[in-house]
Image (spheres, one colour):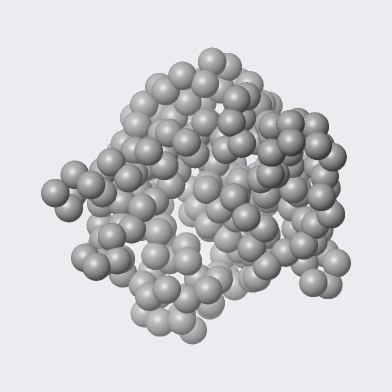
Length: 226
């Protein structure tokens, strides 16, 4: 894995996004669901102290058991700018991934990939920088629109930008429960990204990868600020 370029300002951040966006690979299907190792990453913030804690949790895709987990706590080194959130999270997330002794076949982000105003969300950024297949599974549709999918688990509908471009899918992971919003990050097809999101969510709306990573990064932040 390589370290990520960090910008000095907003213009620099957009320039890095523009450069890296051209490296996103959209022609690969990605690893098959239910096989290999899958990592979930998530972050928690302490705004008063300017701290961010990241967690990377690796699950066995077949059993959804935790294989390994790692955390990292760092300073927030970039201001909050809509569309540039990855620069606040990326260094600490990469540090958590680097601390793992196993290499996952897929990284699942609690956020966005192509479903992003500049078509380069955290899942794209992380995928390009690490070279790993990556997808985004978000809890809300951000600025995009969709028609409500059917009520049954596995039902889906296109997630669209204002110009009509399909940037992801709204996916029902549990019967009658609000959908999640899946988008491609790097080296995974949208069909396969949705299949992974479904396989990782056997009991709850949110993928097990995200549930574990969310709990772990919150704990790491509590311990860092205790």
